[in-house]
Image (cartoon, rainbow, N blue to C red):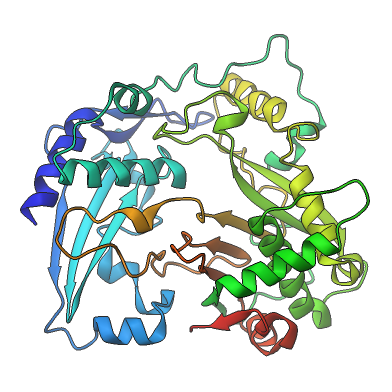
Amino acid sequence: MSMLCDARWCCSVHHPGQVVVEGDGPGNSGVFKVKELQEIPYLAVKDLRMDTSAPTMMELREANFPMRMLNESVIAPRSTFPVADAVSGRGHGSPVFLLQANFIVGGLVLTFLGQHQTMDIMGQGQIMHLLSKACHDGSFTEDELSSGNLQRQNLIPVLDNYERGPELARHLAATATGPSRNGLDKDEKEPTQILWASFTFHPTSLAALKSIAIKTLPRGSSYVSTDDALSAFIWQSIMRARADRLPANRDTTFARAIDVRSYVDVPATYTGIVQNMTYATYTLQELVALPLGEIASRLRGALEPNTTILPFHTRALATYLHSQADKSHVSPASSLDFSVDVIVSSWAKTNSYDLDFNLGLGKPEAVRRPWFTPLQSFVYFMPRKGDGEISVAVCLEKEDMENLKADKQFTTYARYDG
């Protein structure tokens, strides 16, 4: 562990900090700031080899490393949703980045935890890259140092003379007439149980889905990515699983987290958070009947340079946030109804499988998000393996999950891992 300790110290020197909130109070959500952290960030080490409740490497390997076997309460230094006071100026700050090493029978589980108010998954991936580089005694380049410490206040230029329009409707808190924050209308019951499940898409399955999408593209479209095709397939599959309990004319929205660095001229190596969302909406009846290529093309259109509104929308959002003392009413999920909508975050492009941290163990066998508090309708694409395989974590109501697992069209391409 000395290699990780030394690398952790190196990263803390060049990318230091803890998150604190200043100026919060009634009508003011405060300002989240990264302040200097006096001590080196905490490195947790757990020896679980004598813990019979902990999985062995062989058990994880045989099950294909499902989320359910990797509980954050055991293998992570902090939960996904820490107590709000943890970053309050009245108490202790929350470190920007934490690391925990877990020894299990036959293997090692490394857990990396980024403070989500300071970095998105691309930023965290860059921090992990720098940590692995430091483990190899590599020095950071000037670009890595400068992009990792950019001043975020002026990172996204605000718009001059901006007046808020409908472009921000999705980000503003729902009114009393809209869906409630738990995703339920007044006449709907709370789900009895919400579950996470892990599915694996083999490279041949992903290639087949992309081929189907390309063959069914609408006129005027010529390209979709594997991520587009997989996103469309999962959205359509989840809504088939929900079809029995929803009216055919019910709207369903697909919300997709997007790394917008390239849209607003921010370096790809920036370690902070530069993320926005795109949204697509169909009625349930429309969605389940559409060819895969048409849905994938709709998702792709929100990203293409000649059709996207992301550059303007991101600057408009930054401008609005800059003008608000209380930012608590702004959220990319404000308009979503989690009983019918789907929200996806893809980590497929993070190169986590190339990182070995100079531990003498080789490259990782699997990269997964640990199990955490269930969030209905959330979907995560795990980092893509070297052979192209992608693991997907899906969170659904129990009945919907059972329907999804029994869907022959879905299981033709997806393997259930637990």
